Figure (cartoon, rainbow, N blue to C red):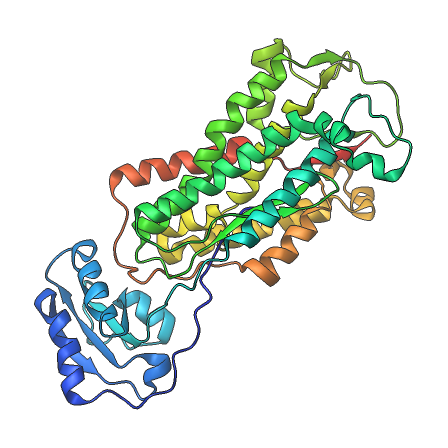
Length: 418
């Protein structure tokens, strides 16, 4: 799994409300760009901000907000920008006197300060992930391992048998994470290097993630950082899949109990048809692709891309739909949770007894993802500091392309047992 984790921001120390002189200074930063209609000094400055200004923007938000943020940061304050409707939905602020184009500027005490990087942790986790993916790759297919004891699995000559798998999978994951990383650096948003997660079972890794070290300023930067990862990963996974398929063979799998079969996405099904000229698996002949290490790793890379593009929470897909649609993205979030629930329930044996027709879409593994979403990731996406700036036409087109990529790469049943 790859996720952009939000920054861990320490609460600012409790301090007395700012003086009238400081309030006037803060107001003077905002006033040239905002026709102020009302000013409030909230009762709880630590939670509600030291100033709340309502008014109409005199210039586009994507032009003025970066200047506000920089000027206020020098004074150890952070601004947020919300439309009147968003402020009402979030805080219950009255809309009686607010106009449709009114915005709220809330000035909060404190600034997220990025801590010192601990690159050694990233390096150790990466080395462990290299070993775990080499180990899993060496067990895949007929690699001719010479095993006399359990420790022989870790012998360099045996581990190197899994190099095609490890190199393919780690290249895709690295491309994905560094897509996020370089997009964040381009927008001057502090971010960690990727953390790879080793797992010496299943795929050899649980994926990777990077952590933001400060809030994302606006929806355009959120969008760019969110989509850069899956687009970079897909740019490498797609050609590697075709390379792997071209070097794989097609045959009838030997009868074997407990044989694991990979699931089909629309993209994977089309790729096999383009390479082999037939729909695989072939229901009439039983023929299917015997995936080699490169094909298997590329298939995992596409699966990771699709999982991260689930339009929910702070996954890449959640970033995308929130940047595009704002609070309306919650409908996509809830629909995603609903569909995953249906897929998970359809994989239960007693449900299939009553509704055998849905057995083909059932996969109990979605219960784990529902747990991660509901307990750890969250269903809805928090707003950016500037939640008024909207996407331009070019970004919206890219956003719909990313949604299409999710549809083409999503696998309702990632694995099934014959």
